[in-house]
Length: 433
Image 1 (cartoon, rainbow, N blue to C red):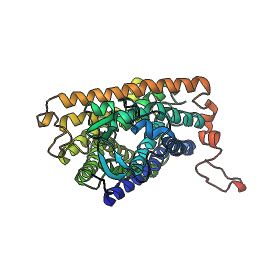
Image 2: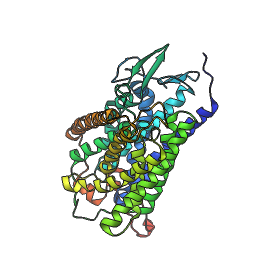
Image 3: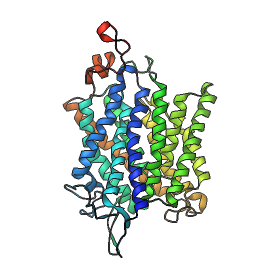
Image 4: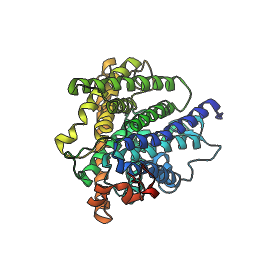
């Protein structure tokens, strides 16, 4: 049967692509507000250069490595160059033919590939050479993200009644609707590895390293929240009921996580902070990502509330174990991603999505829970080890970290010859910061 273009589905995925792209500039504001004044531009530039590098590599070979079927392998989609991943006339074919153009599907998935390495940058804020970061991004998406995206997101190309090129975790039944494993566990594990490679910032735990602009943090979290509707609901690849389920679950989980984080702060510290509100919302968005199309809204509330509490407690792990995760990538994305992925095995139900499975609460036993845990740990281990190797090579060749002088005086000036704010007119003898 000939496939007919569905303009409504196509329009929704196009809009979702734009929403997901907006998340990376939103992340730049979120991270940029959390660092000190002398590091703002470098922090934000780490996100913006990622947009450029990943966009180019996606066209050259990234789409093929993630979603091609020429290799017919569970580990990689295809080898070699990919062009743009299809002609104007071709339709998306990921486990079945969708009434949207392949180029639209490819564009949507590109935005996931962009934001994933950008998330890692928060773990190594204030101390990273810009050129070394750019090289790392190119190597990491090629060696880690593109293959892992194939494992998780590639449900194969349908040729007649046969599916070829199914990703390893997709074939094993791991449920990850929008990227708990491929995006958040992947980035969180990589952030931990890089924090170990680069070491602690000078003055860590001694000098105050407070966010320089909480309004920027709140702006960034708001943009992330807005864009996340494209991230999750857009993954339905159509304007349909599953998209609606994903959207409402995304909203209520983020809201519940915000409350959970603030409750921890109020009980532990005696006050609820704006930074906590922003971080809690992001933690809920992270956790609901893999589960958003497989759980009922009531479960999304519970999932989000627990995510906010867990992540608020987890950000303190860096002090206990002695690694300097500057902006809590491990505490939010790794811990939140792990909880969200594993919680699918608890809360998932075919009552809301027949394509999913039943978790432990719905009579499914522990099978799905085990599948989710194994899939999560596989991605964590691969990303951590591969990132250690990539980071070690960069550190021992060109060096990954700026000099102590550059870090203390200001990485913005050292790496970019710019400052984020001009307090007075410098031509009249004023100063910049």
